[in-house]
Image (tube, rainbow, N blue to C red; front, side):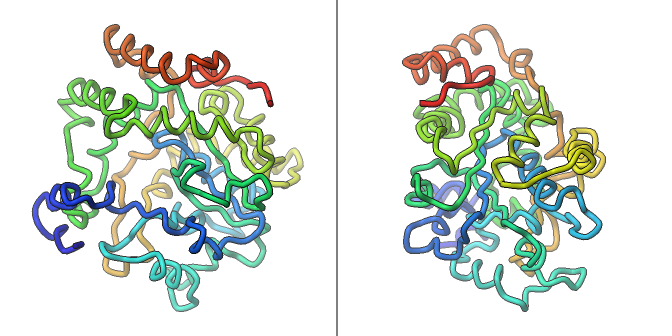
Length: 348
């Protein structure tokens, strides 16, 4: 079936025929009969889409190496903090990806064995990317699990605003590989307002991307008190990066002195990441025929702003979103307030 991606807009045929969408997502790595590759103390950074994923991956790596990029260089998100559930070649199975990830014969352009970037012998834990909800992790999310999960949500309107230019910001070569997906829709250009309205409706409960915000928060809220789960809010991390780094380090079991913490704060700042934006464009190390990046320059360090959504949408659209928030979260005022603004929450 992956041959349809060789056709113009072949992703449409794939979707109509019941194929997984996005076509390059595959949660097999975390299924009960497929998750034996994970080790105790592994960290899965499973944030909501467009809610600080790359930021949290980079901060997690910096905490792991205590800011020592000289000894443990971070050259690409997919090198140091892989995304196991991303299919890197149409038709590629999880078994094939796992073999390439763990094989000593998968060599990067600089001559380094790929495994040594993400599974270095010095690391106390490994870091992986996902966007899954607890239900998709199955028994890994159980209270007695020894795998750790860092989750992060974001104010809904800000999340929608960040998603508006996202489709446009994929490289044409990546889009071509997947039969035109994701389709360029003008969200980063002259159709921004039109696409913003469409994206907001797509992200409402029950719609195409409804799981990105509402399902995500409802799912992670249920497990927020588990010892192997750290649920954060994007707004809180923006307000207090130092406190957030300390909280994550404590969760990972990493002790940082003042000098190490300051170094990590500098590297995890928006200004530093923006200056080094080429590190965050996502290569495909398990696809030897693809030597480009998934994302265009600057796309993953765009603004990182709080409040952008409030300025982008009309009063009518904001009221529509607020109604959805009330419907989805209104039975728990604490959850509703947290979803919108962040802040602390009560442990049950």
